[in-house]
Length: 103
Image (cartoon, rainbow, N blue to C red):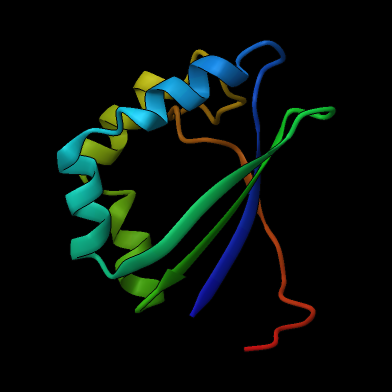
């Protein structure tokens, strides 16, 4: 299952966002893998500060369960100062419907 969504980075935070993801916590990375997330990429549109994320997941339920984990919630709090977030510190995001795919 392919997932795509967009998030919003605060202006001027591109380098900090990249630095934090270059040093992603090993336990967060392991959590993603253990919940069936593969081929996860995040891209930046530098003019709008919009982040485009793409991931392949084994199940929607396992993907949703990640948000309930303490390590994910800790990561959200860690990232909240550089992104547009919801009251629970999760990043505001919009899911994107797939319009075309070719293997």
